[in-house]
Image (cartoon, rainbow, N blue to C red):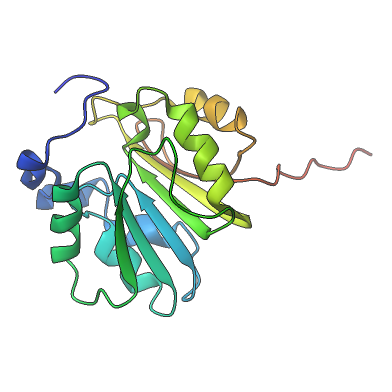
Length: 189
């Protein structure tokens, strides 16, 4: 498809290939987010909702907001869920998220940052709408043409004052949680 291109909604079935569970099992990825049952979650760039049903199931007393640049992708994502009573959807390109400061306890960005012409703009917006103790979770896979290397992602996140708090996976398939609070430095002797 080419780096920096938005994945077309007409090809969404490719993103829902059951073999994807081998590298990005939704329940395992969502468990890495350490959500509470009442968390307020934003899934930006949700596409056809690979992770959306698992996210909704993890926050039954909370709220899930699906956000994508394509209304067609949002419709597919919503159609994949059995309970949407605590789910809503918003069309946005991420340059100016239509949410108040501190609106979300957690944000999921799965294989979407590389599709953006200026990812720092979205990440600044994520930092703005993230609650003070919140977490931004980034999922990347080398199988994606827009893959971002871990060191480049960490530098990008630090530029918007988000800091690596936990890492899962390897350099080709990873999940990293970022928070606004820098990691504690070990005490010197």
